[in-house]
Length: 358
Image (tube, rainbow, N blue to C red; front, side, top):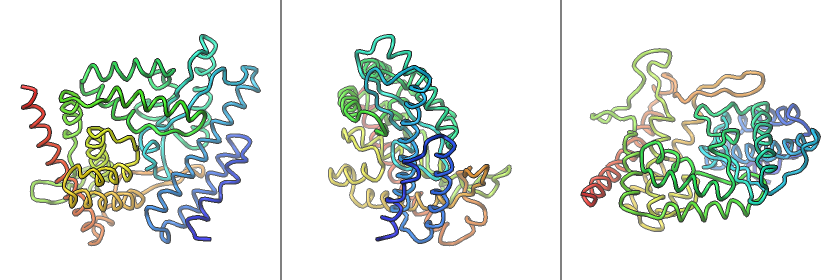
């Protein structure tokens, strides 16, 4: 059995966990194994193993939340639900340390009982996730927030309302929603939700321009001389913010183009594959972006972290000592150069869209 397959088949403890405490302990054991395998597994395989571990923990958390509801006399789900992930979880790009980015799709027909049940279920599941090592999302993109918990008809109204506004905040919400991925519950609800989302996001010049405006405001971390921009002051002086300097600009840029082409895949690498098939932009640029993305995954896992009560708490910064390594600096500069070319394409698209709208 290959090392990668061994990781994939090692979730029996997580799947059998009977409480948040035992689930947390199993997660700690699994993350320790993954840390040991970082140097030997190819980066894409290691990333898949990390995200599969997160999926298994979240699936079991949803199961435990249902059991809590039964034990407290609230009963079983009155209608089906789909527990879904957004953010890096929706893209299957989580690091070993990750917070909550999630939501809930609720089936129709449950009435007031369903509303009460899922309000309590959402709070219960969110607390369980926190206990097993996923802190609350700083932006409150969580199923405990009613904005990210709706019936299908409620989601349809909300998504359409965001689309109708076309302002920066609403575009940000649509970008978050576009990364949605099913975790647990009824997969049929995910399919219906995605059909609704595709109709809401039907391309138009105005939508394209709004998506582009919200994307090109984020720039890769290179200055006009092609030098990597590090933090000038403070505790991270000399460090590079890999998340906001490279990872998010790359993810945002490729998501923007994918939405224009109606691509339903949520992971960045799958979006890249589709864009290459469609010849959406010059092939050599997309190949460079693919190489940059693999580099990004590797560098994100090299950032500093600490351990608190068994859980990893990570940073998004590459340390000054890493930045002094020639190979790291070369890979980083090449990746940032690819993202810079990508954003030139997006800026040209925006200028063209705005001229059409005059």
